[in-house]
Image (tube, rainbow over all chains, first blue to last red; front, side, top):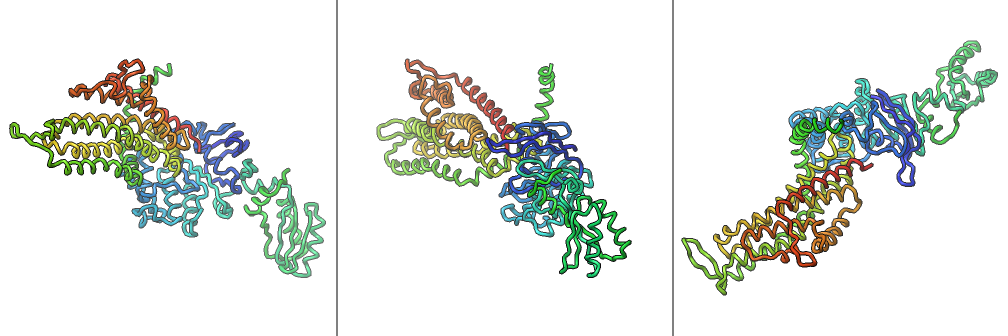
Length: 312
Length: 302
């Protein structure tokens, strides 16, 4: 399914939730990132039709999610917060919402048992939710949102409170759902989790969309030199290589870390660097173990975009 | 043309709605009735409701020796020390106390509590957000909760009416209890219509307002208690309930006046409404309130 936000602004009285957000989400996983209060949840609620934009347009396959009840057959939502009928068991809770999707009692129970078992809740599903741990609650929320096989899955901080086993399990399930052609929008504070799931991200801060698309492409748009480290270089070769690299037009600066025996080149033309450095090393007969850039990580990209204003 | 198309599709829509309701209502009703019954405030109200019943039992034992009995066709008929039929006094006591205490007071408080638990709690617990991401229409969200609320309220108040009726009528023996069952049936009818009206009205408050309890109490005091005794009392539900009681008691041969139920205007003209019209008005108010409440849910933003 195709989700499209065009110039979407949402105000809460005098407070602006999000401003002029443009975003297009298609099949696969899209990570939505930003600090607390950035507007991630507001964006998600607008997509789900829980909130109406103050300005702009949101469509899901060309339809308005706020007024189109039929469209909600295809929505699965994992909220950030707890919202349970605490007196119900996990099984009753998931079955209850399946009934809202027109499932008959017996079918609802069968499907709920299957969904909860898949997420490792087979033993706890008969227990009341008010006895559940945070991880169990998280799994119940995910089971409720996915049990009716929705086309669009919106997950707000789905890994919150989840132990490592639950986290790995949830990530595996998400990857499976994405492979099955579902559109998944996921927000998380744990950037590493998003990085393991997808390269496709939307970065929001102060209610504004900073960037969206492939994270590598986004990084290339940032006009800040990217550090590329070369390790380890033999002691004697460090300065020689640094001097040699400074001759290249794509090198902005070099630095040497004597302790780790590591040479760092700062550049804005990463692709050229990755092509040229092997040639230089071969010519200079210098052997290195690896060339890497921590700047490729989502953490680095997030820090640059959220904390900086370095745009072309 | 669009309207004609919609009207043409109406039978199909109704059929589909009924089919969906058959599947949706049981789990929603089960959930709602459970929540209402485990609510501490419900039990406080039940305890308050039982007070007059306890009082009835106490009075029965205190006045037991003053009763005189006569047998007629094998039936025991009880008289008080003045020689008046006990059941004729008792039935009036039953209606007066029940009208004043339950119909005009506890039932309205209960409707406020129930509608708040049914709707407002779902907003506060954020389960309403989950419901809003399902294909269930806002009218269905409100309707099934409303029906569960009406069933619960009617069951509690109805049971209380039966117990209270029994305790008040006990001094008149089996003859008195059976002789006046039509009073009990009338009270049950009033309770049903009262539940239908007030839960629907308070559902509107809970969907639109942040503090439905406060507004509900103000509505009860200003509108249903004060305006219901004034010239424009037709704007209140109490007027229609009173009209139904007035008509029924007259039909049962009681010596009652419209003024006993405040059904007169400032010119002392009787302004009671026909019972069928009164029932119809209550049902229409309930339906309109539910539509309004469903719009409130549909337009609520999270």
